[in-house]
Length: 370
Image (cartoon, rainbow, N blue to C red):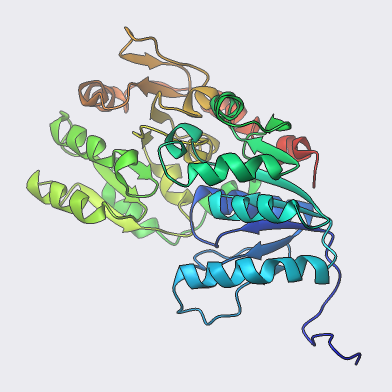
């Protein structure tokens, strides 16, 4: 063996998808979907957050540290090792997802001979309130292209950044896999025990306003309707205390982060999104694929683009064939919606057609990069 060539070398890599971790967030899943569908290697910064299995292409963890080391150490090692991997495997192009990976990709693309594309999943308006936004404004324009996942995000990118190549590509969804996963019987006993329920999916943090859904549930007429909450986050303790305070222990169920939410979404009476800000809420498309109507706020950004409607200042509630929309923080309107949602007739056909617009087969070529 030639001196200096590590024994772990497998093959040259031309295109890579870079992600922070294999956590259960929407950005992580989209990155995994893109890598699998394009047969790109998936490079991961952290080893200690492997919450779902990526399949379809090779995964390479950049940090050599043991799994139990803190995230910031994994990221630091990955940042230092990253350029050596790029040179060693003669990488020609890298697409990254989420803030940390995007900053790394943008920075190194200035100095290393590869093309970079960064995919932004969060709101630029919210990001502009954080100190790290200074780095975003300096480093993002160094990338060869910036992908925004919604119309609102595209508009904000052009306002906040000086990037010369900004495009919009909605998140791609592997709808056939969603359908296949929905037939799993892993949670069937739990589902059957709930009776009628609505579902909330996402990180349990203040911006998701899950407390609004809990408050609304406590005031609706149908005391048999349950709420299933999928996700973890810093607000879980507060939300559990709120459930106890409102005497809803027998109607609200915290299932944490689960790798396959599809059977639960499929059997729900509705999926509720109460957020005050989103990027492009994947859960709405997952819900529509399973013919489950969506109840969503008119928050920035994504919901209006997905469900095909928006609210004026004077409109409190708006219905269409696939769901219902209300203003952020309007609990009274949410109560009214939940009182009626099991009785309203929605179009399963139009739900499927709406989801199909975001199918992987219709989206992946729009990146024009990988």
